[in-house]
Structures are given as C-alpha cells and as structure tokens.
Length: 442
Image 1 (spheres, rainbow, N blue to C red):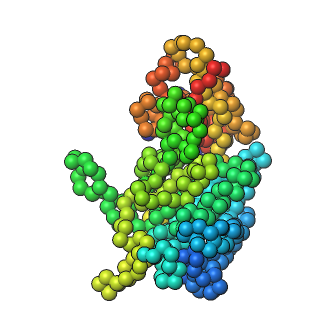
Image 2 (image 1 turned 90 degrees about the vertical axis):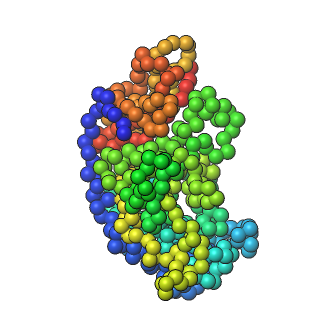
C-alpha cells in the first residue's frame, strides 16, 4: 500500500461510491439470464430471428442501453470483415457501443473504455446452430458493461467514457480489433481500456503453491487483473530504452492495473484486484489484446480460477440439471462487485487530470542525486503533483510526496536505486495514474 510522505490530504470524492452503490446484483444476474436465453450468440448465427441468435442479442443490448436515462449516445458499430480462418465467408459484424461524452473541453478528448464481448461458441467453434449460452464467457462481462452504463448514464464526468460490447471475440478478437484499429485511424485518444471477460463464476477456489498456505482461498472477494509489461510490437529504439531504464514492468497498461488497485484501496472496497503481471492466461486471449496491438492501454479482468469443462462446451445434463456455460453457475453479486470496481475506476480516470507528460529523470551529468521534470496537465482544475517511487524490486509504488504546483523536484537519493513517477491531482481529490519517469538530458 502506498505510504504518503508529506502528501497532500485530498478530499474523498463522493461520486465513485454513489455510482458503485447504484450497481445491482439482481440486475447483473438478470442481464446474464436474458443473454443466455437467446440460445446462441455465435457471430455466424441467425440475424433475423427476434428471439434467437446474435441479431436478437445485439438488438436487445442496444435497447437496454437506450433505456438508461442520461446522456448516452448509443449505436451499432458496424464493420465489414474480409474472409478469414474463423469467418470463411467474411461478412458484417456489429459491436454495440454507448458513449458518455466528457463535459470538460480540456478533458473530453480522453476516452476510457469498459468492454465485454457478447458473442459465444459451443464445443465446435464454427457451429452457429447448437446452443451456446455463454453465461460466464462472456455474458458476465457484457453485464458488467451494461451495469456500468446504467450507473454512469447520468453522471457528469470530465473525460469521455465508452461502453463497448464486442462481437466475434471468439472468432479471433475480430470486433475489438476492428473497433480499435478504426479508433487509431481516427486519431482518438484512447487512454484506458478495462476489458471484462469471464467475470461471473467464483465457485472454483484459488490455490497457492506455498506449503504455508492454509488450504484453498475463496475466489469471491477478488478478481484477477492482467496487464502487459512490454508493449506489443515495440521498435528497436523502444526496446533499447526499456532495457536502459529497466522498465520492463512500467508500461502504461501496467500503470493502469496499479491504478485500479489504488482505486480499490482509496474507495475502501472489500472486493480487490489481484494484479497478475502477464498480458493474459496461457492458451487464451481477450479483447484487451486487440487494443494493446493498436497501441492503446488495456487490462483484463477475469475470475481467480476457472472451470474449463464449462467453457466453450456443449450444454449437457449432469444429475438431471443443465451443465455447461449456463446461468446456474454465475453469481450476480460477484458480477456486481466486478462492475463496482470498474465503475469506480472509470469515475476516477475520467475526473482526474491526465497523467503529466514527459516525466523524466535528468541524466545530463554524473551526480548522486535525482532531478525530476515533467509537463503540466492541461485540465484547469489541476491543483498540483505528487512524486512517487519504489524499490526496483517492488511490484507497486511504495511512497509519495506532495510537491505542489511545480514541474521540477529534486532529492539527494540516487536515481540508480529507485523507480520514480509523477501523478497529478485536482481540487476535488482525484489523482491521475502515474507517469513513469524515463531519462533525458534536460
């Protein structure tokens, strides 16, 4: 936990807690049941039936988002996909998107996403006809998006928040990739993506390999949070700089993961993220990876442990009951807890100043001490800055000091021995994610 040395005592914003309280476990479970009732949401399934298939599911999602009171701009995000291995004929796919525009001119261009994929598969990835209810994978994540949209629809936020339900994730992250690539082509400032995939079933206990562990740990009180360390497809110069700084664990995605943990602590949530410093699980992928590949900051939420016999499986019977990825195994309260963490994080991200640009240690000459410099955040309510640091072996920022409304700070501590970063804070008590301090001659 970050220890604040002479740090500014910021007011505790009330909006994140209000938004979290608005999220309903009953509605979260009802969303999953409604989506599973479409039988299959395979991306190649029927688009004409009003009750079955991906067409009916996306129409329902759009109508749900349109029903939320507030300033949401709801639309289908349509893409024409060329033939590919898991879509041999290519075709049209539709994401469902709702945008809550930011209200501060200096912040509105910043965009923060919450994402879940609404398509499904059964045991045969290419079979669009048999049932594929996809309750956990990923009606649960889609429900997180819906509950966040409902709770935030009327909120007044500085930056823009995007609620995205993607299609064709199971065909190869197709919908997320199409959306991310289009956002990149438009030059949009996507500064954070919270992807929720398989966030509904905490029934599998979490095990530690430690002999000292006293048996399995319940998965109900935490969620795994994956983040990439080294950005996807870096150039030779970028790799060289990462090696020079030793910053293999300080990508923007890794800072976003740390920020989620900070929000959980600041909001005194009983439900916490468990940071996993990998991009994803072995042999699986998720929509955050498509955003990472486009150069955007993204992380993935998923349950602490999984029952793979129920995922990507045909629905069968065990002891006279349906068995597979069905709503029976999904917890509305768990989904709601994940949604509360997402929603609170979105409020903090959207209302905080943007991270200070060009944070760097000055390395013009050999000297024992450290000089940090950075650029001011452009939001007019920015009140000051905090310098944070940690040991080079520590996973998270350990200490912080308020340095006021300045752009330079000095310490006799050697830059060789610590990682440093800078974050901005505003008059309402919101802190930005940390900008990792690189190195420069001036």
